Image 1 (cartoon, chains in turn red, yellow):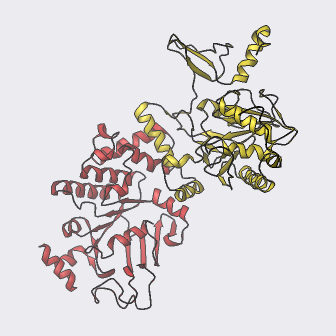
Image 2 (image 1 turned 120 degrees about the vertical axis):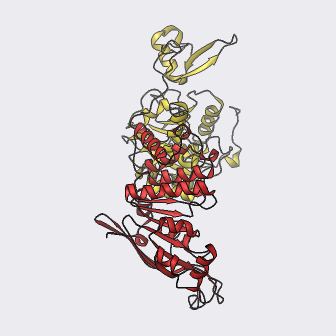
Image 3 (image 1 turned 180 degrees about the vertical axis):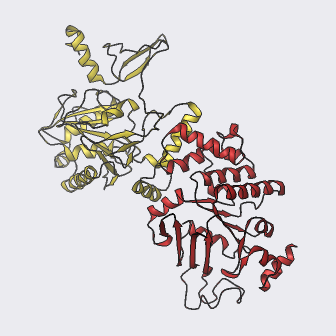
Length: 276
Length: 300
């Protein structure tokens, strides 16, 4: 199988850090705050691979470092240490060695991101179509009619009514905002998509339709995805492989079915038991 | 300003052009950098001038740093030489630059300071146009943080500006920016060309004269060097267009005073409520009048 992303020993520490930070945090210490210097170890030693067309799930409670991991890969945050290599056709990108312009280029054209909060992913001052246009304009589209056509197509694909494409996403329901975000993320047909708690806070039927949409897209376009969630149902439905995080460390990884049916780590066992 | 006013003796000791030589050197240094990097907003140490910020202090500092006793200066405000801002600035330069000439004729001037217009007559290589700028950064409408705007300019990231044009077309079927139209200089930096109407933008494109833009309050100087590309942002299939001054019947309106139908027009409302149009560039209007009606032109 073709590898899309290779992450090795990714780590993010908020604060100045000290020699004891790594020993005094983590699941065994039951904390991610270093008691010596007060730094927060948001993620440490995170390593995983992602293959083409695969959906990888990251599960964990709030503050476990799952969003941090994805945000450093999308260049929203800079990691403290670690390496990530993105395989794009013939090219290899060493993500954290790139300059700001190269990072922006990758973000705009090769990656897509859907945030839990639509405020982060969408510009509410422009229309839904304008949001998609913005992303297309970033990739050097300069034909108005073509941009319009692509935007309409994408919104139709994500089941947003074409009549509402010129309205501000402010007037949309939460589920529709997520659909617009997905359409925006897909605008440049990226080979890699990050989904950060996309269904959290939506009601169940809307959740189900968005999850269906994500699965359809994965099957249609073969997009590799990283799905961050604390909802085991979402993971079970979407992800083939999963990793479980706690206090910034990976405590368990493997096939999703295996993790859910036969959890090894005490925390995962509790997690699975509590949701069933 | 009182034309009979003379500077008190102790203030008459000001150097030529009001600014001290160090201040002029600072402005000239910024000008050279601005010309070297077309469209780049060069920061400079803007001085306090004896008038409020926003009354053309940026343009004035450029003019004072450039002007010499052999120069002939023309000052324009909204196309006219005789509006308050132009008259006051001209008097100030006359008072502080002894020996320098002023003129109202575009063709006779070596240095032209202008607000909101570029003269109708094409400028020559030996002329410099100085424009007064209230807001130098075209990106200010889409990004409030100056630090982020600087990065965006550096990376040529103007997608959000284009999104604004997209939104305009969606809502009004055309781009509705009437002045301060974002313009790309030499294929990279996008500038705010000061509040000149869209009509004047084609005059910037590969112009023979150097255009300098100065923002005193925002402390920025930028330039469109001679023979440099100045392309208004647009889409491939929705090209940039200028005001065409057609009435409801589709006829091009003409100036009520000189009859010219190839100039930028101001709309005037008469005492009876009737609309008429007149050239915004007063020098151009006088020139046309002189050609059409030599007797009448003597009285102007």
